[in-house]
Image 1 (cartoon, rainbow, N blue to C red):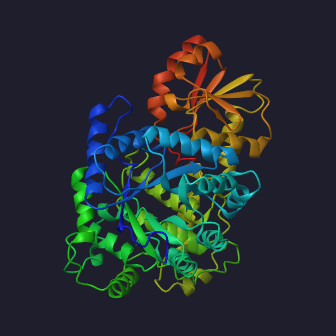
Image 2 (image 1 turned 90 degrees about the vertical axis):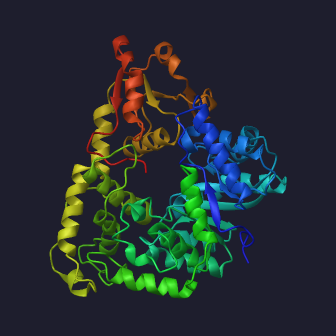
Image 3 (image 1 turned 180 degrees about the horizontal axis):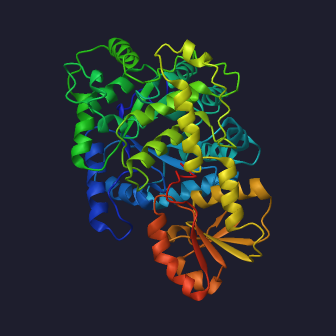
Length: 498
């Protein structure tokens, strides 16, 4: 038994609404109508993040909730990046309640735990988990859960801690072998599982021909088959579907309503057989492990699977090779927590890994290509250290601004401190979201853009990857006033924050 056992297996995702901002009334209306329709159709688990869909997800849900009396199981998400103290949990709940005009939520989700070390920080006295317990004791929420992109072994340790009743994990046909031990652990510990990215972040539908083996006669499309494969695993309770259009929602709903002629066990067995037959695909058997040069070969090869496919437009980028590398390094970082110090390839070409590979893959060549791309795409600790040194270190700045004032900038400030210690300048954040104005984020105040001129920092670093050009173009006129405006990311970079 888990906390999700009696909930419809398709959940409502709120991060992909086509909304351009708070003034996009038409986009907000369309999204609210979709959420209300989904609730009326029997879906009840609704995955809400306060920053989702350009910060408008909670507004959308407020409107949807006013239009239907259907059962809803709402999530309130709180990130350790911004909500570090116990009191922040109640503040986050009260803010989200106000934004959605509700007074209760089923789930408090500690959002995006990146590692077991971060979990330990969350669990210390006076930190976020303690606050979540207090919120639960007050009856404002029913269950404490977490979401994560941590490596599988670390997710298992978090589950086995007994701190959480539910977990949201990334699981699809792309990483099924890696995540299988996590699912088995969740089942043993009666921890409910919600799945995000069931279509591999769009890779599966973009490569339907490659994944055609997923289908059986009762599946009307490859995405339907992929959703059913994820839902077939006995430990999976809910599969999240991000909704951009009503057509997408209806299609995904059909995967859970229409006839499925294949048993769950038979589907899993058939798909795993098909994966082993794919040309160039690493099945995650891990027989290649034990590299004498300490290269995490299996992690590299499983991440490299993403380069085999037609890339999906993401992060506001369209260039195919860049997108393939975004997919590769996102998986390498989020699934395996790998970000090398240097791009020097330590491979000695002994061939041990290739001798043990059941798929006959050209591992040595792939590893060399990955290290080459690490250097080109700034997916290295030393590349980021040098970039921050060039921009900020020992420049005699008095006041430095970062834009935006949320998680991206927090991560960059934290990274700067890890490289150089406490900065010798004061930091301020700027953001266009009115909800963030005058809030204090890890000791740093967030200001509206119209205060840039009066505060007059010597430099503003645009840290957001997705909207980098948009933000830069909106504030670059301040250079006429002697304020240097710079982009953190270079054109060939993958995101520093995934």
